[in-house]
Image 1 (cartoon, rainbow, N blue to C red):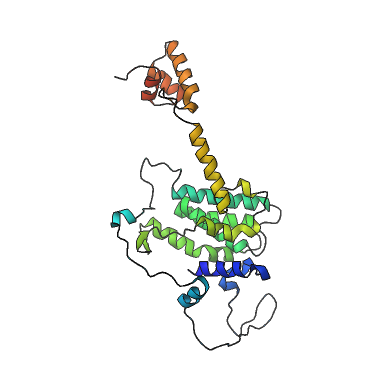
Image 2: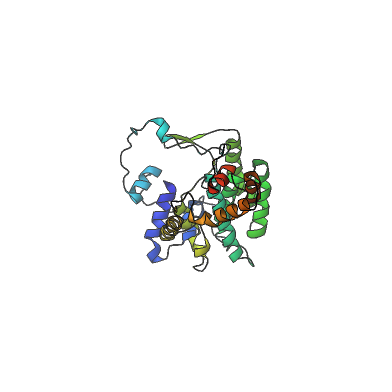
Length: 292
């Protein structure tokens, strides 16, 4: 809710030069009477109405009133989406772990773009935070802190080790809770305690330092229109790799031909399967024989 309100304010005030870096309220709100270390000025405040506003009231004013919450009619088993550790045999690709690995790869591509000076000042905290969150999803818990420190030293030279540790403290706590098998309740559903963010949120946070030339190379931190384009291309690729009605896909026709040639030379099904790293049943089917 707070993130949505901040993004809405930045987007609304963009026409008058709103600074996207000021999205984080901790960069704007300071304790009255303290000194701003960057310019030496004392922090003061103006009392406009004297009225106190709750976060919900402020969010309603910015985003509009929320619809009344109604319990779902779906059975609990249909609402719970397990994001825990992958079961044995489950493919890594397409999982939440793979998704955050793609996010990390995109963050590294952004960092490579700014290789000489590191991540631009004003964006280092956010970049390091997201890189740390990404690492928490696919790096073993006992190595996360070490990997985050290395990442900070390489790509955010303006941040001290102390500042990096402060950034990763809540991430480490959540990763530790996940390792213990703990869950948190979000929208009435028990989920993994590690941070997660929508693709649109990741892009909103990083778009200011993503060059137009780099954007086509990214896969996870992208805008809606590029996501739609990637999906269209992927769908087209799946359509091209259609079945030939002869028991094999287009992409496997060459493999089937090779298997039949090896069979004609006297090789056994097992030898062919081992040589081609294919299932024995597939080799038998391709060679027009029944596996007994």
